Length: 68
Image (tube, rainbow, N blue to C red; front, side, top):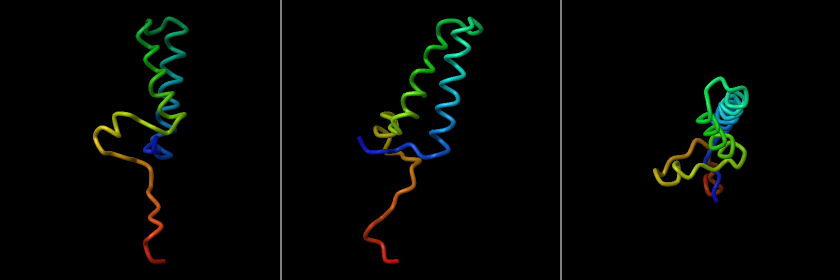
């Protein structure tokens, strides 16, 4: 797995995932709030399978071959 989730994207995913899970725990939005596990996991592991399929990445790339 290649890291493809950058810093800001990661923070948003973790906060959104925790918020959805908390709302589900307190019966505010119902059981579908457990879908928050997905953004929480993708933020924690810094890997998004959908980004891989689409060839996207929000992680800044460091090119070792580039001249300084």
